[in-house]
Amino acid sequence: MKRCHVTGLMAALGLQVAVMAGVFVGGVYPLWVGQEIRLETRPVDPRDLFRGNYARLGYDFSTVETPDLRPGEVVYLPLEKQPNEALWRGGEPQASEPETGLYLRGRVSGQPWSTGNTVKYGIEALFAPKEKALQLERELRDGAVAVVKVAANGRAALVAVETKAINN
Image (cartoon, rainbow, N blue to C red):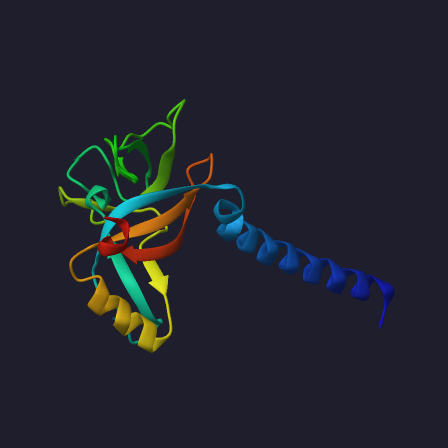
């Protein structure tokens, strides 16, 4: 094989490895450097025939009724710690990054013609084996608390889901 073909092949392989490493690091970055917080959540649906078993979670702050936001736009949600509680709550979503405080970075999804859009923050699903997902479904029917790590740039990762009974 010619030396230029080998060099080109190695460059292409190196680029693919770099892209895969970037995707991996982007996903676990909040777990490495993020601040752990707790958010009140509720289960939505624990199974998907194509993606496997998981606990799908919903948050009160994930639905926005603002016509100014369009699908695909980045949204920043300031977080506020509740006094005398271990829980954090979401404030009003905004289009610009907050200068101070902890916040979530999400992306608007939905239809351009609808008034209600959903914002995805990357903390909406916890994958688990079938038995664990079914157990989570039963335990979390009355709501739950999501343990989330949030990095300084607003990226978040779901660490665990706990029943409210544990946290009361």
